[in-house]
Image (cartoon, rainbow, N blue to C red; front, side):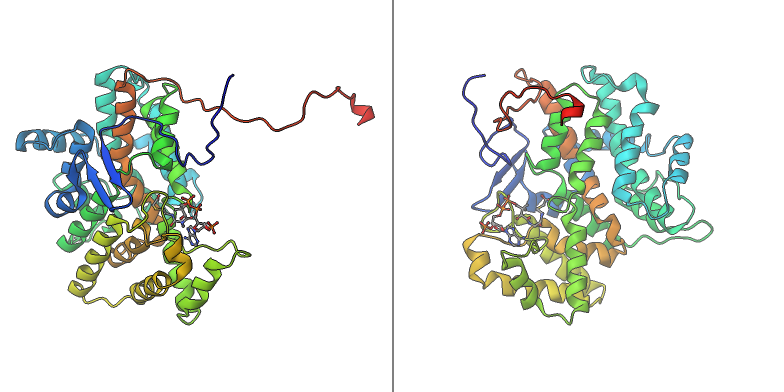
Length: 392
Ligand code: CMC
């Protein structure tokens, strides 16, 4: 009751007080717990950054070793979970599998679902972080009909993921250190982004005291949409289409400007960044280095750069402050690593996981925690007389 402020899309509404991530959209600054992502990306691996997000401080050697060991203990999936994969159609989207299997974790760990029990929460965090790459890699293996490759715990987080994705039984698989480095960088730049759609979803679901697995599964669903994490897949598909269409980027820029067309440049624009997306800068630089090192010439990268140039010299994009975002160049790196396009958003989810969890635990620790329950402005019918069915 009383006065309601209407803010559809939450453009100006703050939903939380948070000390996890600082973002300045005008200056293009992004920091996790006070550290710039440029420095973190240059000096840390993904697990070190995950520790920082989850626990608030960079770990000591001992803390990091303990954290890595805790994750290694939980990388396997319960054997019964394999049967889920038999049930999904072969061409199921891996994001659908990811969300379902993560939700199903709550059926296997029923004694660990109390969000108010720190011990249960801690083990659930380890389980989620450790199992997500396994769940993800199994979904890929399922789609290509290959046997699942079990985790190998002597490997690092990213190495292990690559071997579960690309190894086949009976043949040695050599892990390329350049791929490991690139993957670490991509996961780090995706690791948190304050109150984005999926993180807000995780907080909102968690605000009802739903368990951590259920909350993260909801976040995965929110991320899947093409306006959010699904943009990385949509972007590469768009670039492919431009290539097949003769590489005419101007035509697609014109289409994106056309008010009568619903087409948008995928990987372009952001609710908060109005100058540049610092993540896109890091990724573009890394694309350049990786492709040169691997001696790959990817026509998609050429088209992406041309598209950026044409769009950024067009008043439509300049006036609306639309720049390439994190999803614009990430697909080029995923392709170079050999990751298929349907898996791109899954990789985003793996990166965003520590951010989601940090926000979920921060929300629970807040003394102001209340269930999320926005209000609305009703503009439907006023009271109407009920009509019996024969009179309608
Ligand atoms: N192509 C063409 N026009 C665009 C685009 C685009 N990619 N993005 C925004 N606009 C226009 C939009 O039509 C509107 O124009 P007008 O003022 O004339 O009506 C204006 O720019 C403002 O757009 P908006 O939709 O009000 O902005 P928003 O803050 O609600 O949406 C966005 C942000 C990211 C959803 C949007 O820019 C978009 O749809 N981009 C394409 C999808 C994408 O790349 N998403 C990834 C976002 S970054 C990572 C992540 O969150 O996962």
